[in-house]
Length: 328
Image (cartoon, rainbow, N blue to C red; front, side):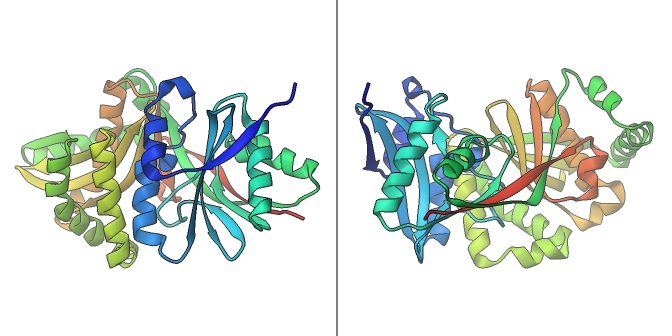
C-alpha cells in the first residue's frame, strides 16, 4: 500500500499546539526540543540563519517534527552547544523510517547538502534510526563522541540514595549537612510560579557569576538574555524549579532546574562565596536531589560538564555524540 507523506511548514505556535495534543503521540524528548525552549533560543540566537520548522504528515496526521535552522546549505537542530545540552527530532514511536525518508527528500529538494546534528545521546532517534537510513542512501556519515553528560537513576528514598554513594562520600554529605544546620537556621525551598522566578532571577544570575570565573565569562549579555527567556518560558509551562538554600534567611546558593517527564535537569547553579566554607554550592544540589526523590522522580540529569561534584553525588557519564551527514 502506497503511503502518502507530506511535509508542511510550521510555526512555534503550531508546534505548541501539537505538543498539547496527546493523541498525536509525539515524543517530545529531551526538554531541549520543547517549543518554548526552541523559540527562546531562536529569538536570542537565530538572527543570522533561516528557520526551518517542518512537520511530516501521513494523510494529514502528524508523525514527526523537524525543528531545524539552515545556514550555508547546512541544516542544524535548533540550539547551540553552550546553552543546549543535547537534542533530537520529535517523532511518534514506530514512524521513524517514514519521517526521516520524507524529511531527507524535502531537505534535498531545498538544496540542503549537509546535516550537522549534535549533541546527541546514544538513545536519540538520530543515532538509533537516521544513521542507518542515511547509510542506506550511501550518504557520508561522520559520527564521533564529542562530550559527556552526567546522570543519576534515583531510588525511592533518600537513605537508599545515600547508600549508593561511596562510604567516604556518604560520610561527607552527612557531615556537611550537619555543619550547615549548625551554622544557622537552614531552609531549602523551591519556587515555580512565573512571577516569583522572574523576581529571583537577578539574584540567581549574580550568584552564578560570583561562584566561578568561567561562569562569569560565560554570562555575556546575550547568554543572560537567553537564560532569562528560557526560564520564563519553562516557568510558564510549569516545568521550572528555582531551588533556594538559605542560612538565617539569607540566600546562600540557588539551583535552576527543569522538572519534566520524571526527570530533573540541573541546568545552572550558583552560590554566595561567603558560604563557600559551608559547601553551600554542593549541598544545594544534594538537597535538590533529595527533593526530586521525595517528588517521585526517576532520573536526575546533571547535564554536560565533568565537574567533580557530579560524580561525588553519584552521577555516571553518558557519552554525547555529534553526527554530520553529507547527502550526495
